[in-house]
Amino acid sequence: MEILVCIKQVPGSNKVEVDPVTGVLKRNGADSKMNPYDLYALECGMKLKEQYGGRVSVITMGPPPAATIIREAFAMGADEGALISDRAFGGADVLATSYTLAQGIKKMGNFDVIICGLQTTDGDTAQVGPEVSEALDIPCVCNVAKIDKVEDNAIFVDMEMAHEFEQLKVQFPCLITVKKDILQPRLPSYKLKKATEKREIAVYGLKDMEDQDKNHYGLSGSATQVQRIFPPVSDKEQETWTGSGAELADKLHGKLKQLKFIS
Picture (tube, helix red, strand yellow):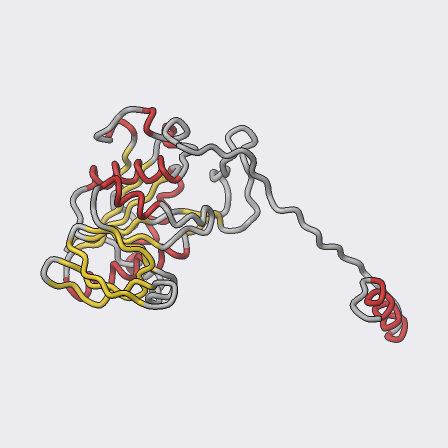
């Protein structure tokens, strides 16, 4: 079975800078990590490989430092990785991102099942997976809470609905997005990390894509534009008090009355 997991590098904290002109996150130089939801997707891919055989590949889109999470995936057992990276892809919204990923997937090869995390912690749209499936013209199931089995060139999954679960049989090739806690992600292996540290990572740019029209990628290919983006304003206030226990107790009592927490 050929399994592909889509992964993404996201900011490691909420302390990130925003480009005032384009309104997109400045990812270069920021602390980053693999999107937590993608860890569950990767674990699902590894479990399928262990149960049914085959290979697990990973693909990501981002600047060159995003190759770090591909190395992390290798240390967790992934067999192959590809990075989609080109300045022409910068500033993409979910539509342009999905189209670019679909083009990269076509370049990488044919896969039976593509697994994505339900959403990312930076965009939180949960739209990229379904839009990739649309661009590839393959069936998609979202909110997968359990993978039951693979049989008859199809995968059987439980999809979580608002008030119930729906059991589905989906023919290959297909794409699924998996929920958090579907499985417990494994830790990276030091032995695998050392064994794969020189493994080649394929890099795809615009020139490698089947569609090389710049207008379909990045800001040009985005159907939506960010009007304004800004960090949240903190309304926290801190005061430092000194004094005896009785004095501090009086101050605290007075502050609580001032804030009308007590009468």
